[in-house]
Amino acid sequence: MSASTTTPVLDLTQDAVAVTAQLVDIPSVSREEKPLADAVEAALRAVPHLSVDRDGDAIVARTSLGRTERVVLAGHLDTVPIAGNLPSRLDGGLLHGCGTTDMKSGVAVQLRLAAALPDPNRDLTFVFYDAEEIAAEFNGLKRLAEHHPEWLAGDFAVLLEPTGGQVHGGCQGTLRARITTTGRRAHSARSWLGDNAIHKAAPILTRLAAHQPRRVEIDGLVYPEGLNAVLIEGGHAGNVIPDSCAVTVNYRFSPDQSEAEALARVREVFDGYDVELTDSAPGALPGLTQPAAAAFLAAIGGTPSAKEAWTDVARFSALGVPAVNYGPGDPTLAHTREEHVETAAVLECEERLRRWLTA
Image (cartoon, rainbow, N blue to C red; front, top):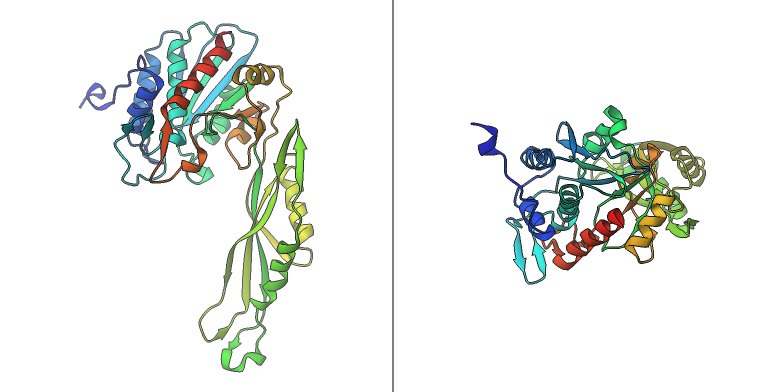
């Protein structure tokens, strides 16, 4: 069967709400993005002022107008598993459906701008990537950064994740570590013959409860940190004194620290214990003092705030590209069965970005 009969067709002449509905109605659960990626690629290749490249299910489209600045607009194509919330449904001023908020409305805005701005005031790179919602090893933006970093080059980047129409600068870093205790196994009827490793974990929890997290101000944005237990593993059976226990902690750290510095801080808190790093990702500085960022903030309006989470802006930061999060949709609705987006917010996001890129 030919590709023309199997690839869904996107009509980018429709408004951003209608394009969002088109995108939502093409299921794209993580690792199953190919039909949507094919549709996005076909739509972009039909735009004469863009050059288009593809790596797996990630597509990058670029203008080459010789402008003094290049801006990157990025968004992921995948969604979490569908929860009985397809196809999309328009109800008054709300568009319902899987991915409406996270983040197909942002992708729709990207596509509309890619098709409608042949002569922007800055050169533009549009990045659409796969597998953001699952383990980092599959992340399409990570793959692009490793295989084709030149495709992501720019002076400033905007990740169109849902932010409620507010600018969220940079992002927190995150690491997880296991704090372990050991003991001696014994029958619980003769507990005095053993040494209970779970009981030994109590001081770990006490230190966590007493820990005072930092609040760090960068470029006028305040990043609150958090150090919390997220998992406890221990025990063998209902009649056995455990000889091992592990508390997994998650440290959400301010981007003023490197991953190594954040791990050193965790080791300091748990001095005397075995601390094993299990995974880590760097934060991203907001970069709001950059000229392109200042122009962006002036066009978008509002008061920026710190991103109180980790996002893929960190991957741009690692490449030396300052980045912010800005997109339509309420982030608290992401991944929910009731996921929806306000249609007015989608249209407003497109209009604000268009104003920035054409003024």
